[in-house]
Image (tube, rainbow, N blue to C red):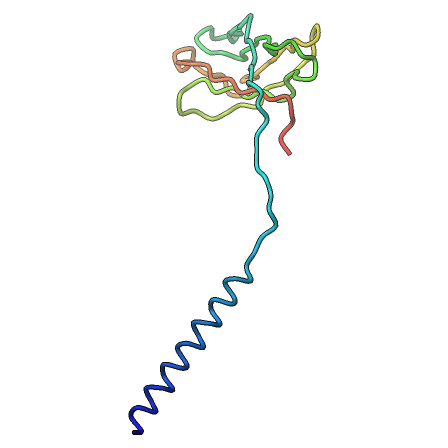
Length: 135
């Protein structure tokens, strides 16, 4: 009889724990909300007039890379405010200097005069631009 009583108590404790777990799980509710995205194509930028400024004393190295960047949608609110350049597939990104031109075009200069880069190292130009500044 004691054995049946212990089983009954054990079953009762398990049922109480299960019921309390269900009660806590049922209490975890959230406010209904929505998630979405702006349905607008990202137009990007046009890069034109790329100039490789060779070092005066050593024409096998580059002091700076210059170009113009213009938003493809021609919206003056999308003018590039930050531009970074990478001249090799796995190289470092260089923050470039921007000079406003005829809106919405911006003249970009990526200066390498402190450590000129060999012409042979320029395998590709990866350019990233944004109309907002990094926080």
